[in-house]
Image: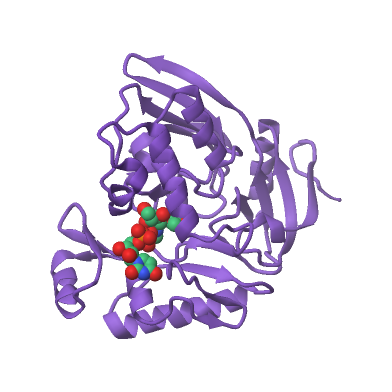
Amino acid sequence: MLTVFLPRGLSVLEISEQDLQTSNTLGLPARARVLHIRERSALAELSALVHTGERVFVLGGGSNVVMAARPQCVVAKVELRGVRLFAQEPDAWIVEAQAGEPWHAFVAYCLAQGWPGLENLALIPGTVGAAPVQNIGAYGLELAQCVHSVLAWDLHAARQVALSPAECSFAYRDSLFKRSAAGRWLILAVRFRLPRVWRAQLAYPDLQRHPLLQGSEVSARQVFDAVCDIRRRKLPDPAVLGNAGSFFKNPLVPVLVAQALQARYPGLVGYAQAEGQVKLAAGWLIDHAGWRGRRIGPVGMHAQQALVLVNYGGASAEDVGHLARAVREDISARFGLVLEQEPVILD
Ligand code: EPU
């Protein structure tokens, strides 16, 4: 156990070197100095540590990270737990979940309590606290649409703030938290606004086609089950095959660029967005370029979903970087599109 002595008479933080291979869903071997945040009393000391010049990386479930073998920072693992009905508004429930709650279990709990609204986001790995960072989204729903507020600790200013959705600057796979310097924000809890009048969100093509959702009256439980079923068929379970979900973002391009590409590649999948933009399916591009099911050493692009990079066992961050680079260069050469990596790098 390494103890770090802090200035201004504060007590000590218990930081110890730990193995992080099972704390990242890609299953990459890593060791780093780790601090477990189980209560808020550690936060002021953590801010003091940041002021000594120490780099801090805030880790949730490790499902959106590529870890180097020896990250040169203190990894703060957020393990705050608890869910409560924070408030009841005339038209909505406000539910608060602490950052360390596992996301999927939280979605299932809300459904069981009669607070539906999050079921399109079922089975996404990771924690509640990590969800706003990349504004998780799936099957026609983005987290941003359900957020009431985010409670966060500003590590630089050493104070807690409550941020509205607008202040979080949510965008596709992006937020204030992702854009800020790593180690600036530690999300403590998220409050969700779940309307009492529930409406099924079934616009996503996979949901429209799903056998469970063909009746005229569809329940939240059926949407939850259908989303779980689709994800289990398409996406590898990180407990079985290491992965970090989608490895690249779907590129957003102006409608004219999308039209030109679709004229050349008639099967290219794109979804119209606001402001004259189209979101192209990176999975289609990678698949069409021949990468689906292709391996380089211990890593490859998944056979059922070419957007997911998988670790077949024994991979390092370098193996992941090598494959990611090869895919990006190929997509750039073929389609003139730059793929942006989705998982963050911890080095
Ligand atoms: N496609 C292919 N080949 C592939 C993969 C996809 O042709 O190998 C095509 C599909 O046929 C489909 C289109 O591409 O027409 C889109 O595929 P999919 O519905 O699987 O969704 P995606 O755009 O690849 C995004 C999210 C996923 C999310 C799904 C469902 C991103 C980066 N990824 O994937 O999120 O589950 O939509 O909403 O936006 C994650 O972040 O880890 C993740 C899985």
